[in-house]
Image (cartoon, rainbow, N blue to C red; front, side, top):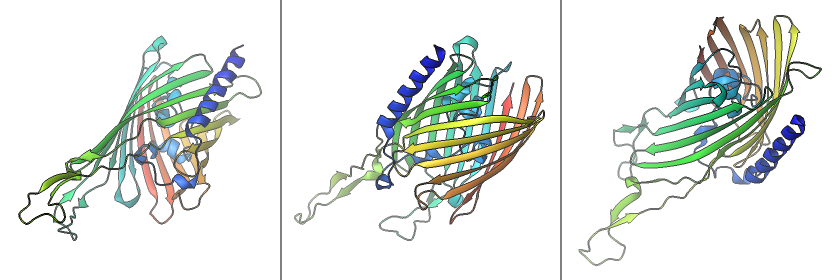
Length: 347
């Protein structure tokens, strides 16, 4: 009965995901905004190519599938993660996440993501070569997550996001929702270690820029001599969020008592461009030392500039306290490679 219930719920999620965001085609490339919400955070998941929809637990899972927050707690009650990525073209992404296990009520998570542009030279119509001043846009995303283990095999999670983008005196803000589920076959039987994950991400209303920089005072054309200037406001085009439907499968296999191999595969159906195909793996020795690799591909060789991913990590546990340090490197076409470093604390 439980298996039938899970199959029914998973089927509904798959159907809902297909209806909501089944639009993966290159004709919509460039029509979405707020693309910073798609950037990877956390070195462990990034090193496996982001094919982590079904496999990550705790705060590491928040960016990939909110349902994962409900797993992997053991006797711990608080977990935090900090991540920094030197992204392409001198930009960067800083990310912080904290999760709190509140027992039978579930698990709560809070995330903060900041996309940094560095200093940009200001240019205007009157000074196309620059005014001598600089500015830096502010892109911030705040997320609040609730996750719960319905059974020892089924986890669900939901994330509400507030997205804010500010460029000088012009800004846009909006809200989005992530929802996910993870099903684990269990720790016994032939298929032990097999897990499935499904997630709908960045579902929300359109965003639109507004602000003083979209207003000017001008003298209308063909006006009489001495005519007074009138205020004029330009309306920006509203843009949709980069929604996606993601389906993943992962399998953990113990090669030896102290050696584990985890392999993952994932399909991302995107509403703003070609679909993505992700694959990744992780070798773990005594759950202390890790080597990882992955790959991201799409239906177009020009839309996605990132490709192969690599990484390593170390995890030290003392009682209920644990600290993990992870590193990831993403190869890129045209641009230099991308470096990601993250630290996770669990207590």
